[in-house]
Amino acid sequence: MAQTDSYRALGLFAGIGGLELGFERAGHEARVLCEIDPAAQSVLRERFPDVPITPDVADVHLQDGDQLVLAGFPCTDLSQAGKTAGIGGRYSGLIGQVFRMLDEGRDPEWVLLENVPFMLVLGKGSGIRYLTSEFAKRGFRWAYRVVDAQAFGLPQRRRRVFFLASKTHDPRDVLLVDNAEPRVFERGSKAVGFYWTEGTRGLGWAIDAVPTLKGGSTVGIPSPPAIWLADGRIVTPEIRDAERLQGFDEDWTRPAQDAGFRAGQRWKMVGNAVCVPVAEWLGARLARPGTYSAVDKPLLGDRWPESAWGKGDEVFVSRVGSWPFRREYASLQQFLAHEPKLLSERATLGFMRRLSTGNLRYEPAFLDALVTHYLAIGGRIETLWEHGITCEKRTA
Image: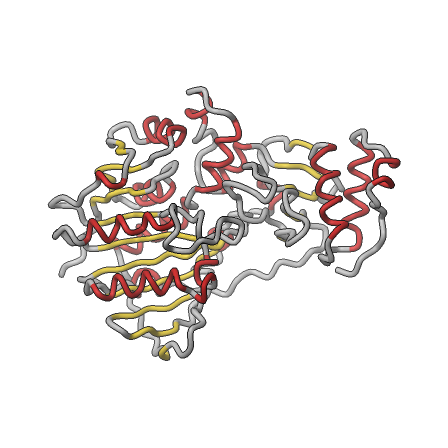
């Protein structure tokens, strides 16, 4: 079948339109957007004014002329920080609606899915096994790959699985043809991002980047990550910079706040979004595929790799990494366009308390910086003593 330059798409689980915006920038267009969250709907109405919005995915059906299905389906049951109920959970199980559409008799040329890489590990990869088997039984070829947003020059370490399937094209020629060596990040005097909402199971430590922006957190609130700046301050980025870290124009989610939704909803929506430059790359490659010619070996055992492809019952391991490119990189401190906010006294104390109860390893000067920051913004040394927090050096 001849390759087309642009496709008409269904945008399922659209959120604030990260996938759809990226594909629009690459020359494609959405016929309909499906999103149940009212706050996200207010953003979509403003940013995609000519595209109808359907709240219930069960009401969406493929029509003649629909060539592409985009679905960043819910990660709630597949995320390490989520419910871990698996692909059959209440939320992530909504992927079944995609297969319901495919079984109604109209095949799109492409189906693109997006989700968290923990799905490759959870339940020994039961989520990715479900996807590959369901597409294979319907006659689709497929490929998937973990992609890191840092490869696109954004100082956010954001790794996501992109899964592409087609009956008429080779998904490898889109998803697996671009490959580059990842950049090596050394600490030096660079800023460091971390999760202030964590501290017992992990830090999300990211050199010259923020860790993955998230829609929720261990402490139950959508919130920004923290940044240890080179000048010693501990701050959190402004929402407009968070939007830019996802590749959106700043104030992309402002329509939700203007409609009366809480500011925290903006953080949740940005954290759940698909990174726009990654989507734009995929949209451009979909219009102009390359040629994948690597000779790959079959998958042995039940450990799923970070990139693979298959057809029928066959699964092959690809050797491409998570960096399709090494685009010019904006250092985190230089990237921030808006004055960050100092991490609050309460948030700093809570983080140090969680940190002190675990056995996580971190840079020796990190706790000293946290204590200095806490005292500088009005915290009391006696409070630290009460909670058993000291500036004890630890091995990084």
